[in-house]
Amino acid sequence: MMHAVVLTGHGGLEKLEYRTDVPTPQPKPGELLIGTAAAGVNNTDINTRIGWYSKAINEATNTGGSDGFETVNEDDASWSGKPMSFPRIQGADVCGYVVAVGEGVSRERIGQRVLVRNMLRTYVDYSPYECWTIGSECDGGFAQFTVAPTLETHPVDCDWTDAELASIPCAYSTAENMLHRARVGTERVLITGASGGVGSAAVQLAKRRGATVIALSSIAKKAEVLALGADQVLDRKADLIAELGTGSIDVVIDLVAGEHWPSFLEVLRRGGRYATAGAIAGPICQIDVRTLYLKDLTLMGCTFQEDEVFANLISYIEAGEIRPVVAKIYPLRDIAQAQDDFLAKKHTGKLVLIPPGDGS
Image 1 (tube, one colour):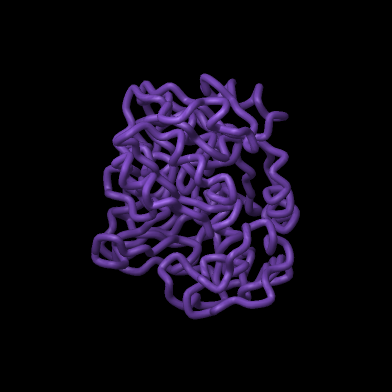
Image 2: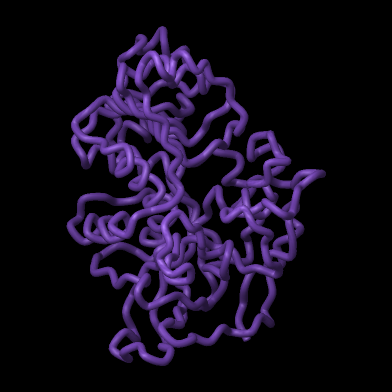
């Protein structure tokens, strides 16, 4: 048996049950058993718990983050748009050590420190645009042990702490995927939600590509976001047209949406690109289609990740080209407090959970 946090259904924090009697999973052919050393907290953990992905929900994540929503359509409240299976162990970020292997896997993998690609493709036969997410469609990292396909579990050679490594899978792959899909180069890039896990990743990764980064954040976090590499930080409620001017931005990397969304298209230049992988300020936005077509804009929704996205992240880590910011570490049993702190948005970087023992 192992310690784990079990999600029993869609709803508030009371749906997260810390248990010490959960059966330890066993690796099937082609899988590894991983002793979890650290697991990051992400928006998707909360969105999945509260059923925010359901089209029945129109509010911002924070509206139901602690208590859930009164009405959730169970049929479309997951990444895949299909009903969730409960109980579920969440946790899209898995950093740990291989402790056992399934049939057909070399025992040389035992002992490796690894990261698991959060957007798994093995289980859907590598079908394009299929979303099989660890911690959503299968059990994830909020436990002492988890299993994952050997082909999607990457050994990592670096001097980072386990908590730093656990900051990478979901947030950094989401950010890198948006930059990859938008083909960001040495351009002017506007990044929303820049102090959060994905936003802070996007700042670093955009700078790595040579971009000039204008970041939107709480102005109280300006110094911290500048330290990440941003060239300019504006208050998240700023009048972007007045501050930047129309047509001044090549690419918008958006995680927020909400009421200020129309201004993102206004500040894009003709032929500019907009990429999104989140809508924490609200998913329903108004668009003037004339702005879209008269400026020849490209709008991209970014969930599915091509294989090279995660592999590239591993190479950036090992080359010392990025380094995440860990804001706070919690024991796994304090997951409710960690998610409450996450929703408060007073931190910069990542919040990380540590299970009892590292399984190594």
